[in-house]
Image (tube, rainbow, N blue to C red):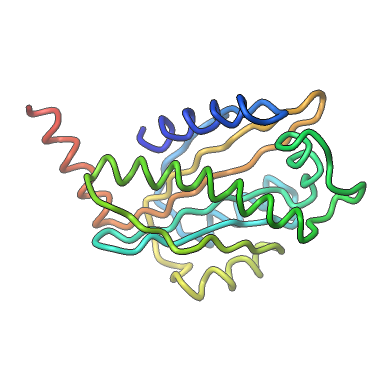
Length: 194
């Protein structure tokens, strides 16, 4: 609920300031591993390379926020954001990587801010990291910071991005450890009791 509400506000703002229309497509919550989440995203993309922008949030309730883009759709994403495509090739160049990093940073910070407000705690995420590759590479690279086989409460929110006749999807993932989930539930129960 917190993730969807914050991302709806964020994409409404993105729609006002960019050339494309941004919408929350659907949301899901499950118990999953990072490994399963990235592979599921990849299967929906028929095994294509993805670009992941992610950061860790340190503190009393650490968690990880990830945004996955279809690497081959960088031209659609750049056109939706800026009004023009970077290159005729569907390949993530340095400029495209910077755009995806900034876009991921904006959207993921919206999610982190909502978590911070819900808990009444200050969260400071690490600098966003941008990775491109197949699921195995992404998992290995992100596994440096997180145990990919650990089970999390996984919040998944899919975003639809459209510009003219072109459209693509991206996915925001929140890997919520048990301690954070328990604290969110405790605060929600207190709010209902008062």
